[in-house]
Image 1: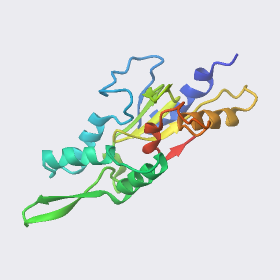
Image 2: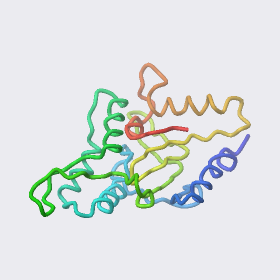
Image 3: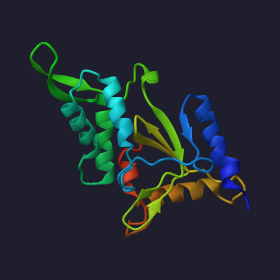
Image 4: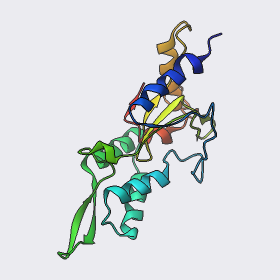
Length: 196
């Protein structure tokens, strides 16, 4: 049997590290999970730090509000929530705050697209996210400023249908594989912008 970690997962982490991503390989090191609950997919401490770094003028109350806002998006489906979060990420959000010219709506960024080096890029393997019935553990989750924007599912090249198996696993994580739809962790896919 092939060693999926050695053949695909670790080799997928290496180029990310060369590109400047902070890597935590839980196969060889212990990651101190900062989440209050494993049903959350956001690394709130990293999100809060990024919002503060990208918007240093923001008051603490407004910072707390903005951090909550992206995590408490409500929609009719995971896809609807994903689309709303996507809009917040690309169009940003706003708060009313005094910045020397009276109370005005001020734009708040979750991601700095103009200066990518200002963002926090973190890749973590075997990140557990609890669903209704099972815990999903994607091979690699890519976080930008604490938000899980990418999911990579690695498959050994020696298995019969690696692409099909990876796709089926991603569908399971998203609760898209069965009629009951309760075998994955949809929370992770509220934020997800791409899967590989």
